[in-house]
Every structure is written in C-alpha cells, then in structure tokens.
Length: 412
Picture 1 (cartoon, rainbow, N blue to C red):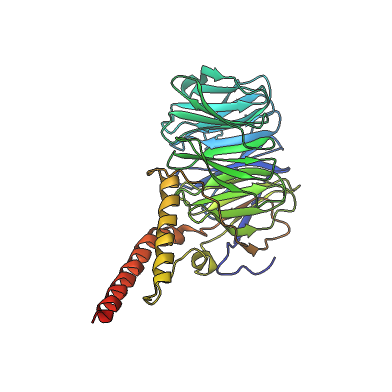
Picture 2 (cartoon, helix red, strand yellow):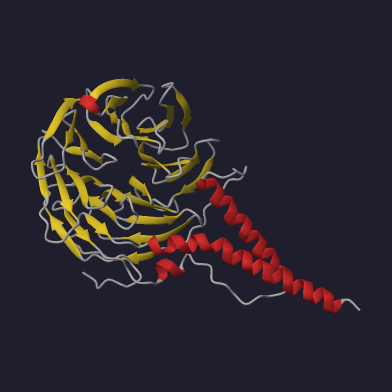
C-alpha cells in the first residue's frame, strides 16, 4: 500500500468479517456504528471505537441488499433477496423481527425522519410504506413498470423519490399518494437516488454512467455529470449539501464539488466494482463497499491541509483597478450566488448550470481493501466555501474603491 499523502484521504485501520461482496453501508446518527450488508446473507455492525468487537447478525436466507439506521439509532432495518425486511436492535443480542414485505427482492429500505414509518422498494415494481410500530402496511405506490432499485423519503417526510429500471425517477406526494413528476432524462436503468439535505434537489445515478441533479420544485435539471467509465451504483450527499460522492463499477469513487460543479477527487482501491458509498451523518467520514471476494472495512483519520482545501478555496488577491478584473469579479459573484441558491433552497434562476470538469487528485488504496471507512476529507472546506462570497465581496469593494480613486485623479 502506498504511503498516504497528507492532502488525500488516508486509510489507517480495517476490519474483516464479510465473506462475499459488500452491497450496502449506513452510519448510525452518532457515527459510533457502521452497518454493512453482504451477498453472504449476514449483517455486520462495526464499532468505530478501536478494539471493539463487531456484531454479526444472521437471519436473512439470501443476500442482503440494503440497510438503514432509524433516526434514533435504536433500530436497524435490512432488506434482502429473500423478499423480507428485518428490523434489528443493533446490540450484542441482535434481536430482530422479520416480515415478508414484497413478492420479489427488496432493493431498498429507508426510515422517515420522524422514525414513525419507513419505505421499501422491490423488484416486484412497487414502492411500499410501512409503520415502524408492528411493521404495519400503510400503502403502495405502483406506477413503475420495471424493478424499483431505490426509494427515499425527503428530509421533511412529505415526499418520496424512487428510481427504477424503467429508466425513470419518480417523485411522490406522501399524503396524496400521487406521482408529482417523472424524470426521464436517464438513458439506462436508474440505480440509486437521494434527496439533497435541503430537500430542494435530488441526485440520481444510472447505468448510463451519469449522475444527474434536479430541482424538485421546478423539475429542472441543474447539473449533469458523466465522469465515470461504467455504471454508477450509489451516491451520497455530504450533510452540508456542498459535496456528492459516487461509487461506480469502474472501481472508483468520485467526490464532486456541487458549488463549483467539478470533480475534486478520484479514489481508487476497490479491485472490482464499487457497489455502495455513504457519508456519516456528521460528514466526518464516508464508507464504501465493493464486490471483491474478501471484503474489508478501513478507517482513516482526518487528513492534513493540502489540495483538498486549496482546490476549492478562493484566495484573496491584491486589489487591482482594471475594469476587466472588476467585470470578472462580478461574474464570479453572480455565478456563485446562482449555484448556492439552486442547491440551498433560495430563489431559483431560470438558468441551467453546466458543471465545470476538472481532473481530480488520485489516491491509490491497498490492493486488498474491499470496504472502506474514509476520514474527514472535506469538513474543513465547508467553512471555506461559506467564506467564498465574503472574500469575493471584499475584493469587489476594493476594486470599486480603486476605480473611484482613478476617476477622481483623472478629473482636472
């Protein structure tokens, strides 16, 4: 394994436990536990605290396809090819209740933010909503015409989004149970979808190697990324909403800066397809899983300062009085405000934001690594992004003052 660079994500320790491909990962709300599911039919709960033993839960009779912690962290849901959903208590006893949720493979399970209900998606072409208490069936959404790969609640619990092999992403109103809109821009099966933390946008990954971001209020396509060379299997928003990480069958993870619409990092290490990825609820870590034969989990500490910060930081420069600089500064502010309002729920502009592409830095991982927990690569840059407009406004003020002085001197 190459020595980790200070400016890149580093892998400091790993766990071994799964005997087959890792299909799904999810962090608990306090980041003390990480759950992972596998083709080996076992659910593992890993403890972030060093020297702590992991829990192995057996119960499913076929591959586990999805896992999700409840908002409180007291429950853990898993779905399987055995057509059942199990609700676990993630402690040493590993008690669970199981129920047959669908007539085919359960592909996705996700708790509502209030913890009172959860949604499932299946190869039986349906999306179903259940009450957490006693796992009571509430209602079904059934307009997809092919397998449904993923379904998620919006942060406020009022909407549900689903992704399907019918090449559509559908937005549903939970109360009316009606389809609000269908997004049909993907050229292949849609493998994964999730809401932006603000609830104003959704991002979807597809077999057409692309990631697309839409505004759920206007239904306009905000961003389109085609950076992977194979199918994109999963994605996860950073809690700040500024970043998106993707996992692909090309064996890489990519971290995208949504504010600037560009690639920050390309991360290597998985020997086969990267099947799943998830940020922790605090944004300090992210975990990824792959389809390698001997899965592992790696932990990494926060990296030092370097390109991960410099690549997105706007450095203040000496004031310049030239009109060209003034014009460039104004354009920069308008561009930043446009993307920020689109992704954070502000006033929407009737403008398509075309993401700028930039070659990302590359981190080579261990050839033996299969499932990783990566350290905090981006937390420090969040505050820097928040400062970007302030720095630019200061620069504009200086330019205006210098321009005014030049005009005063030029006046006889």
